Length: 293
Image (cartoon, rainbow, N blue to C red):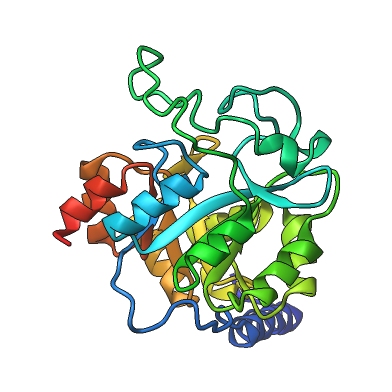
């Protein structure tokens, strides 16, 4: 069928828009967090290695550092008196001998709890870290102890905003180039980027979803990310996220790919062969052994 002149004009107009959008799109911004001196893939100790010892504790991070991990991963909450502490959950019930929401208690009250109380390697048969003096850890304690260590810090759900005190603490300890900030909440990362533009972030949930879907239809090149890494699971909501082509699409936009939470050496090996930049794992010992480090 022969195209009418106005059909050709519309088609040309659409092509111009498509090519304009493609060439106007920008890759991920550059931050010094990913330096050429790093060994890839990065061994990222999820909560400090929660499969080996009580996660999100100074004890775990000390052990992970001794293992030789590249990155310490952690979760932050804010206490009733405005202190940033490390814990995965919003409440202390699952991991300590206490009860209650973190935001409803003070740091002094949290420090009375046994942060190794409920950690078990054998589904509750034994609790080897009970009574060992492992306490709830503050973010400041981690910054003081590991001033040269790379960190991924996830902002968890809270009623009170922790963005400003978090940014202030990063600046106080000159950790701007050592930290990647993560969160499942797009609004929290938007607030953080505005408050702390010099600190790198990963993608939030909606940002990740958009990029994954675009990559599935070969349109990732149109995406201009405000973040430097995609911290993603193997699959989500019935959609396979991690594929070799996803890694290529991410790298084409200057984005690092860091997969969570992988504890199986065979899966680690596959992801390493695909060229991922980092793997978050509860078993950093297994990944270090696999890499021969």
